[in-house]
Amino acid sequence: MVKIYFWFANSRRQRLARRAIRKANWMFEKTGAKFFCLWYKGRPLVKSKQNLKELIKEGTFTKGLTIQDIEKLAFYCTR
Image (cartoon, helix red, strand yellow):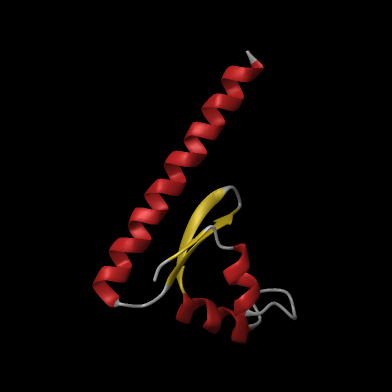
């Protein structure tokens, strides 16, 4: 029973990741901006590099976090 649960959870996670990658590629084709796919609270999040830089300037993230750190955390980035 536990194996079935883990299989289902893993397949759901993969499905969500594929959907986020498709969304990032679609947005990249429309705008030409660089997009990142990140895991946030158990769900994939698609944000542009420009948007993430603005959030860093506003102080949304912990002090000392840079865009290079976010690039390392991303499981997919366009271009």
